[in-house]
Length: 293
Length: 222
Image (cartoon, rainbow over all chains, first blue to last red; front, side, top):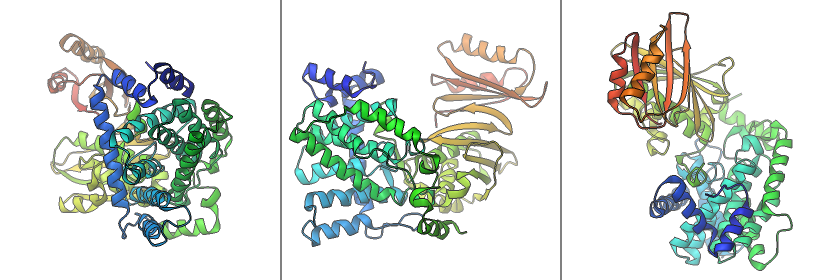
């Protein structure tokens, strides 16, 4: 049985057996959950389909959050991608951004989502993976399998650090989602297990210290747009790893550092809505707008 | 922890603690009511629940859970309207419950047959919950496993009679958690028994038949 206490464990076991991290993890999870690999695959496939539905649900022009603070971002971005011929980042990335916005918006409007790893960071993985599926034509099986790699990364982070904004700040939520997505992207693109781990390390490094400071305590501002920045970091980290650029600090040590930084963050910056953007004059005004003074 | 704790759960947003966990707290009440017709619920929200419940849909989530919906049911969005159409009265108030976890709800329910009850519990993060009080007595369970609540009169030998029954009549059952509290010596008491397995319904009627036991309720995993 795998312990999911280090990326080094996953990389060395997968490399030794010359298989993908996802194959190793699917086999291990089937044993530990006493189910067949097919059953687990089908459950993951269902989760991928729910992610695709969340993209559609959150892309409605009339999508509005329960509080009324946000809404329609997914639609606006996808229209821009068409109108501006992909804008600055190109069509593929602009559409990926619109999907991350759509899923995070779907969450804010009480739609159905797959927490990955949390509800607040639920737009990152679908933004990356649905885009590879829809716009790059990768087979669904490759995408669904890569979700096992993403999940394994999340388990290692949970064991070494934390996935909760209240404990580790946003680096633990969107940061972890980004690290999970980066590893999955590398695997779909045919990278090695070591490259998956390197992409994960780079994604964590590049979000080290990100605070959780939600305006009015709601999963909207800045959470929805942070899903986008985490998606961008996932793509850039995956591309750097695939290009052959190594991570100078190994993924496991990055996770340990993330834990240490998370512990050092004051409570005002860990989901309490008492610091950062939440305590700005505008942040306070928006809070009063939702909840009254 | 398994892979679907990370890629999952499938849930209605926006917050695992303020929405998904709230549905599960409501579901505990749904199990306590056990399909008897419900007249009214009065819900007290404390701490962070009190401050942000409207923006997170915590009110809808609790009410949806009470009506039996799950944390992935799209009906959560329309829970207030659904309750209206079923003729269930509901009200929400905010109050600081002393010493309670920041995300705590106290749900009082009133049934059409005139009986009533209450449940107090906390949403402790990631959709996990901890039930703290039932009908004013202290309990402690997470709803992750099957839980049996045994209401009884504090009398010597009652616990032994329950566990002996479980062991001799249903020997495959394994107790994974046990908690006891009482109002006063010889007064109302409640056992919380968490078990690994899926217990048969007969177990509950058998427990109800034991002397000094006033009621037993099985709360299947919520």
